[in-house]
Image 1 (cartoon, one colour):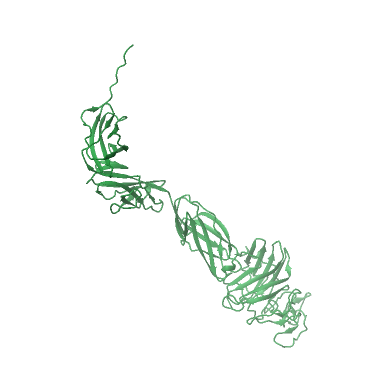
Image 2 (image 1 turned 30 degrees about the vertical axis):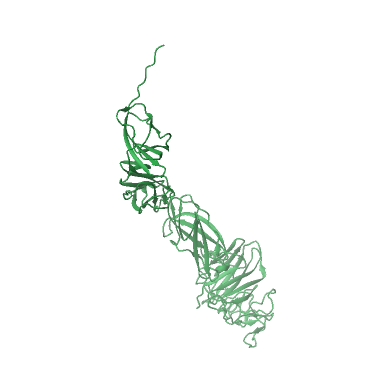
Length: 552
């Protein structure tokens, strides 16, 4: 017995589905009883939207070895004139045990002795006599004589002249129209275009119908071997995810980013593949827990269109594409786990620096002070954020020239460990902290310029005395000392208060709005050449006295 992997297709671009009838009562009646079978082993049902192939497991090879009866049911809106068939072995390797000579009774009605044997032996019986096995009933009586010589259906009227077969096909006779016949043809069919697919010269061909099978009608024929190996030639399905400007087998996107999948089929017949690819998204690497279906897309030239775009919550997802097969390709699915989508929640990174006893986004420190930076991660899932933060101190406002080697701090619960302590030279510096992200949280980087570090030389700027109580909380300060002082920055208790040029050598210090208490005020004065000097005073604020109103 030859076991073959069969490939069946129609002249339409049709998908294939294999199913079994629900029971014996569902036997296919498109085929008449032939020897060991009471009906069709396979039925091809053609509809306007596709094609299905159904198997009746109760019907095996009709001659007990490897031949199959195949019915065709036309449930489409147009006549069916041909069906293409192909296999990875000898589907068309006919060898004299066709429908009219299966090896035992019964045989299909209409089988007749043909015009001439292909073996050049004179027929014993007259051409046109009905073929029978001894014991079969005809007109209610058992026939006494067995007539199975050169038996086949007469070629249909629409069969063209000069039908031939390649090596590997053994015709049983020469038909009434002088064409060769194999005996596997049905009463309205003939075979053409038999050729190679896979390892055999008889692996593909076309079954033609004359007249064409009308809407609602049926026809039948036989194959040399049943499709025990499954329909179609082997193929593989590769996939590519796309979203947020990224594409590949595995990508990472921000929550809210639409993501699509696309597939490509490869294999011997991928370029002529029809049908569609279905896309699904799973939450587990075994692809058992479906998150969402992502639609389907038709195949053309071996490539499928994109899936539906999906927006997913933060998490790790596994995509899988499945192709249902068609007339020339086996059903196949992409390997689960070969496509991974990582969806991350958006984050932002903010920083705060500490040094010289002050803390803030912008702080002044004296030369020699140790300064550290610390990052805080914000976002929908930042409370569980892990990963690392890389801290870098830059010399320039564009954050391109590092002032010191970067350092790394681990992130736990959305808070980064402080950077390594740095003691920069006098100057103005800019921190940048870059968060690596984790499985659920996207990377983010603090903005250059959001954190400014001013390192100055200590200098007596001849600021006003800090003795006494300042009830008048706004007064002019004239920093003096270094030449060419042009501008000043003022910090109160480590927080930036104001910045501006000196006017007539002075600037206004305002303590208005502060409660009664003691405040450390830092002045950072800059020369025209960019040098900076820092001086500090402590001021005590009082509650302003309210003058009594004079009575009129």
